[in-house]
Length: 294
Image (cartoon, rainbow, N blue to C red; front, side):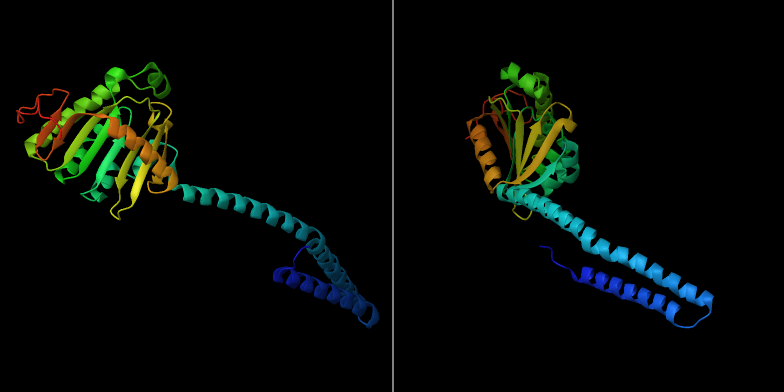
């Protein structure tokens, strides 16, 4: 059963009134003794009123109302579906979705993430090659100068499996390039006595995806889930989650296991290299070839 709205009732009322006006005009033209031209004009105007507003009345009553009910039901169904999807995303902790990495980086540039992250909070990334992250040396230098703590883990380049190459299109050269950028960064940090910390570990897990964890200036925990489907940044879909909500927490726990089981290969902290399993030579850090992280 349909419900009449005030707008519908008002439209129907005016249609009836104008139909009555039309009838009155026709009767006036026939009953009142007037000039034939005026009588004809009144009858024509009355007929027009009746025709136009009768069509409007029946359209509103029989057709428009039916179409409005169907539209209302369809809209209600779609809004209910959208509300269901949004509510489920909220429950899982999904905050934002990006069609590609470029869109994500424009919205969340690394420099902004580093600057806003509280000093006592770690910036963590568990990935495949770290190629794009470690090549952002300008941003990482700024973070080390400010005392930020970076903890990264990537695939051991000597243990990159054929399946990982096939699925992620990742090659040893990707990691080697990232490592060279990291060595130059640590060389700079030693010379500048940067007060921050940066640590790189190797893991042996075939990952088609990666995570990046950081804390906002409002102490909100965020997890960036990067799903890679190729080497092109446009083939990487990015989801930002609340790392304290169900899905974010599940991912954080999984990658924390991978990170904690990874093997430290190089670590710089507050002016010194405290772990150097890669046997890199640093002129200003003579003990770097044998010091180990505690």
